[in-house]
Image 1: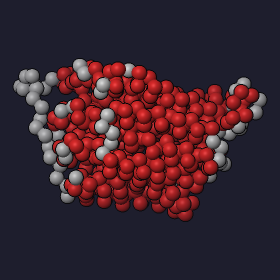
Image 2: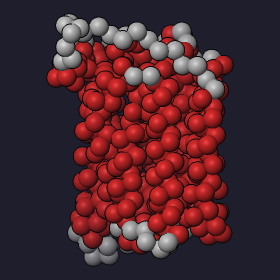
Image 3: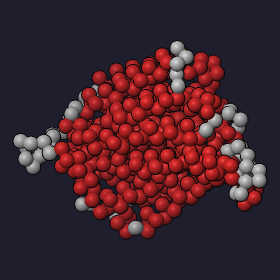
Image 4: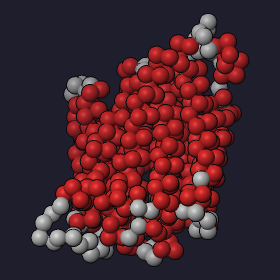
Length: 420
């Protein structure tokens, strides 16, 4: 685990810097537009190229040096950050610039994440898969503790430019640690006819691999439905809090830090424990726990509810995520993981993108007007969720959270999934 931890530390530093930049951009976009759709579109444009190019990315990961691909992802992200910084300093930054940068970054981030996931199986034995996956969650949630708090404080002091400068420094750390770590490269999988490169066969390989294994297909359907419902709520998360707190960046940062704390605790427990022996049960129970916590979060209108609900929600994600990842790592051969994981990413991200695409318009055009005083839903849900700015988004968030719970219950009723 030592080499992996070294790699993980460098990537964690980069995640903190990127999370700070993401938080600052969220505030800047909301202050510029006051629309949930604008923030949802940013998430959508990041996802769209990932969906379109994931199969090609999977082939690259299985055939190219994974260390080189990870370094390329960091380098491109740093270059894009620098570009946005220069546009902001020159007072030429527009929202479409951020959308384009997010799309380009999504392409290389997809390649980097696939290379990172596939590298796990070559760097350690199977018994450490759950621990390695939980460490990845620990990095994400650790960044969620540090980044929003720092960015929320620093945004008013050093602005977007100062936060982006910090982000650039963290990319340097990530690339330096990556260079110093050896990542074993598996043998390239052989083709049916080695003299020809069958592009269509390569592109469809991951899909065929999953379809031929019913338990993996059931797992993919379940997790895709989960992320569809989840990302409807994710698109509303920041604008809902900002709308209900009069654009208070510190309150949003505090809640995001609570999310990070819950995730860190959950990931730490899984890292020490190793995860449940019946991994699919950990996956489904974590999913149900996240859904219940998010329902409570939607009903909240103050920090006293938001903080514990968000803490409990995030606590479940390392459990469900590491269990899910360990199943895939154990059931998919290392030499084909790039293509199979790319197919998995396409299906999941397509479901996610649909959720992101519909969330903003539903919130801005349907639920928000309906939950204003006198709106057609205000009389029914107003006593529970309140009325006014953010109430419509809270109602849609509650519906998406209920969807998470229903997916978990449906997954447990599926025999193929229980046997995964």
